[in-house]
Image (cartoon, rainbow, N blue to C red):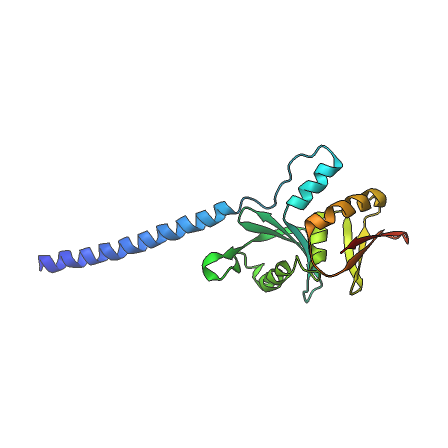
Length: 205
């Protein structure tokens, strides 16, 4: 009887030990995942001139696009931070997303508020370097851009805030846009300031 009693306790100890080990492993991987998410946004390094500022923006991985929602469109800003991406919805931090290496690089999140938009966000990110998704990449690189609008299949209207010097901005854009993206299709950017009829054309390909 004593042997059976000890055997029962040994079985319980093994069972509890297995649960404890599983819990520790889960905590380890959860912490490891969180450590890869280095912050809510990727801070730019100090810049001393306009060219450095533009270059910092081009080096930063940042996307701006609109998500459809029953209550109205939502502006999403997605910024790289470590191996995760910080997501802001309508100006408020909503959480992080990442790609699971063991699940075919599917996007994941721990945030319930992001789950309804996860598929749409992943679709937007997957097309960011195509002509169709180029506006999200363009707006992410240049905060001066308020909005974009496809005028034709080969013409994208780019609206700048009223304080922007359009000539200076246009010069930088012409010099840097090919470092931002390359695709075979022809595209004209019709750049203009908000509430101003004057515009300049920046041609890609």
